[in-house]
Length: 169
Image (tube, rainbow, N blue to C red):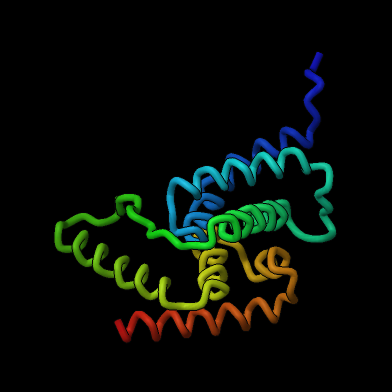
């Protein structure tokens, strides 16, 4: 006989497995502190697990719902500590094949990281949702509580500012 575990819990397990790295990357980008990002990511998944019955498919994807919870947990942490910390290390780039490629990649990452630090936190959040979390514009809109077109416009403006910040570095 199957266990009392509901299909909702099984869906949550699949959501956890598919989104945990993206949620962590997103939270780490917002907090710019790896240790705090680990704690906040765990707290976000705990909140999501305990609130999984509140998920409503008509309001967006499970992934967008989860990132909304992660966003709120990260903002709670930022409010709590009222300071920013530097993101100290990044995962190794396994695609780099030659030392020259690795150096070029490291320099490019450093430039982007510095540019991200110079743009507005809201713009940094949009970039993180798109590129670290891998959300599409509709999911970003659901996380932020704005229209899809507004999310797209805000993302475009954020990317323009990020490009300018990289070029002016």
